[in-house]
Image (cartoon, rainbow, N blue to C red; front, side, top):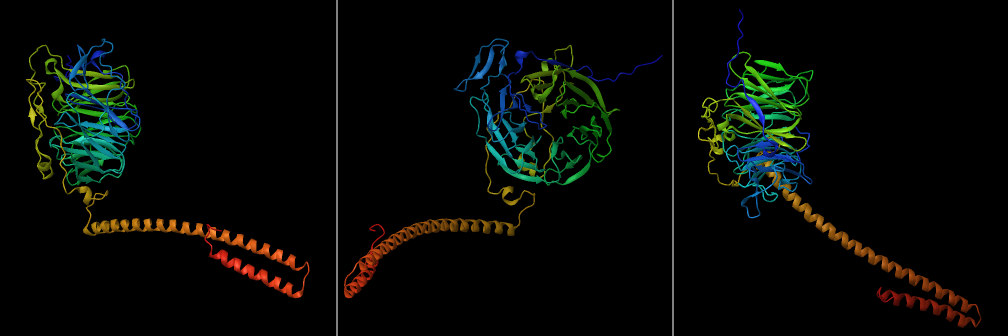
Length: 545
């Protein structure tokens, strides 16, 4: 007799369901950028999607309560919410002139919501600027172009923005200049720069308490870094393929990566810090070309793999049992996905045993909402499915974290549903000192000599400006003198012609006859006349000639 062992897991029967079309968003001009990004960010209040926009970069922000059985929930010009009745086939359809967040001068590459304030979102763009925006509670009435703060440091496009999981107002940005910058958004200050990557950075992820930073790079290396001083604790080869790789920290401290093999086959691996070069497990999935984005749920230890251009979502469970990464199922869809966003656990519906919700973008401009549900017969709150999850209250302030404090996220219970805490608007308090004033793009602090050289160069620049103005005045004066000289030269030429004419007449008169004396007098008279004429003409002004 043979026995078949089946692994016991409460997530073995998780299934996905697509909401009706009228409950989703449609008619969205999704960005056509080739940058490897999810193009979508979601929180319990808003859904933000990077869109195509002429004359710069923009993204659209949609309130999640926009679609309702009564119609479309839209703000009027006074800011109050009203229902606009529409047919069921038109519900959720976004008008072409819907307001955007459009303050960037280049295409937006990445967006991320603040985990502690559902109205604050950060965006990175090809214009090398990171902007932080404050979104009104009712959404956008008109196109927003003024951000709360502009974070300027990168020399090339900014392709990634990540918020700190426990510290308030701490933001990470990574650009194509191979530099990672840690920002204090509350004062618009760059706290530190990390210049440990020789090539483009593919992904960045904080660990559970935000004390470590995990990065992947085009040089095929995976690194664990101290985000405060940039010290590299560990470095190892992630995947041998040359295409983009991704890596995330799990709640228990392990590292999950996705990448490509030498034969361009997609892989995922599980690694332990201290032994990153020796994976616990590495599995090949398929030979597709799309980059896989790992999305992690720390409460259930489920990892969802969403490939760019794929029509499937694979999900796995991480356990201490061999083979450690257990395949659960695949959610199949008919069309490929352009981008995808994952709802935080505090935004799911606990009454229907929903554990995850995805906002999936299609090339046709359709934002499809997919719910992942655990089948349960009981309608009571399932405590085993919903352990305490990170809430919207930061564990430490930006200053405390920068001084070295590390704390786990403050957890909240979902038994009574999620109730957002009252948040004030983001206000930036400028400080007198900023790392930008004392740190060059290389990430090294300037010396006093460098500061003196900068002051001297500014003074020299002012002097050069003054000299250039004087030179311009001299050039104008010289042009005027040259013009006057040309006029005088023309006058002299004209008088010379008159003198020659008079001389010719005198010579003709002398040849016609008369005494020698009269001839001599006539010969002397013209010379006298000529001399007097020249003297008189030379005394005349140019305008009188």
